[in-house]
Image 1 (tube, rainbow, N blue to C red):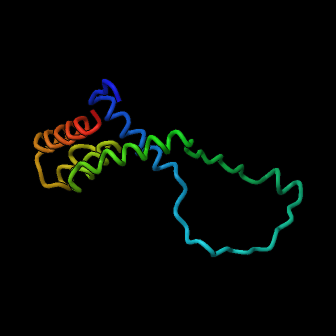
Image 2: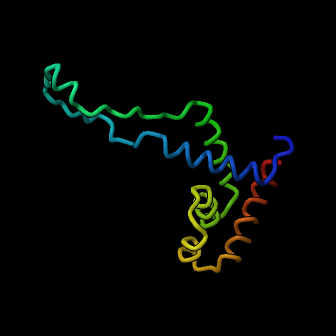
Length: 122
């Protein structure tokens, strides 16, 4: 990648978090629930709540998410967690309690982690 900035890395991490949320949940393979089909009347069909449309990520979004996950391999496990949670927009105050560091120190570690990623992809 040519001329990528820290802000672009942050945006890509945020989009990877969003894409991860759109993925369907993992299910055990080979098990299937068989139910009898219920035949509804036309009146019952009209009165039913409409199902919401499930948004699924595109193959391009999944590819970009995989690329971001490869970037995170450079970081220490706690740095990965920090960067991923900031990509999910978890507030600094919550993160400072979780990591046991002051917000300013945590922010400094976050910026260092982003620089590590920038160096890896440059």
